[in-house]
Amino acid sequence: GNSVTQMEGPVTLSEEAFLTINCTYTATGYPSLFWYVQYPGEGLQLLLKATKADDKGSNKGFEATYRKETTSFHLEKGSVQVSDSAVYFCALSDGTDGYNKLIFGAGTRLAVHP
Amino acid sequence: DVKVTQSSRYLVKRTGEKVFLECVQDMDHENMFWYRQDPGLGLRLIYFSYDVKMKEKGDIPEGYSVSREKKERFSLILESASTNQTSMYLCASSGLEQYFGPGTRLTVT
Image (cartoon, rainbow over all chains, first blue to last red; front, side, top):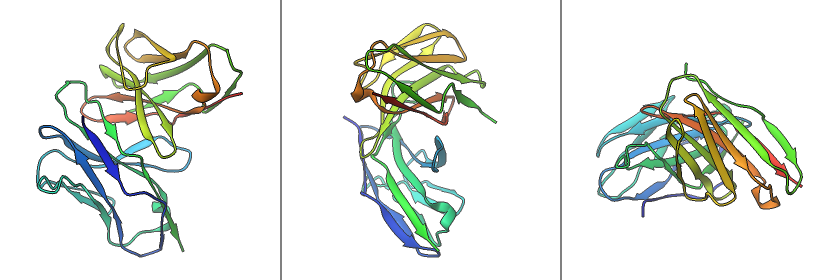
């Protein structure tokens, strides 16, 4: 069945460091891929998405490229801020059921220190 | 702006109680979802609904039921709460994307 695997956290960085959070997936067909972010005490917010191979999603300085050959969708940011401290979830939707169901990874906690 | 609201942010219930978690969305979305979030497990789908009075089991439906009497409202019911249902519960509604509520942290003692 479909699944998403993320790197385990927590990831601890200093402000202005480069961030990579790895995400790989297993899916039949051609899923859409998403990164969601959860700030402390809040629900999930969509950060970015990509719907086909080689698409790059970007938002708020974060980027991720849909790599079909490596079944990956790694999240990157060139210079993190303290305000980026949150839990990041990679997710996929295979879209075949018509309901937009999402399958999530376990989440990666990011802590950014001044 | 899409808004998904959940009736409580924090809830404490006793083992064996019947618990209702309410979710309301204001975007006229057909699809609504209930997840539970546990550390190291991510979000797991409990139930979803694709229309009024229509529902489908997700990956972990045992111990839960749902109700959707109106399009904007989707309720999660714990018929007899148990300590292993202590968790964060997240509701979402979906058009082209899923939009999440703030979550209800439920503690069953």
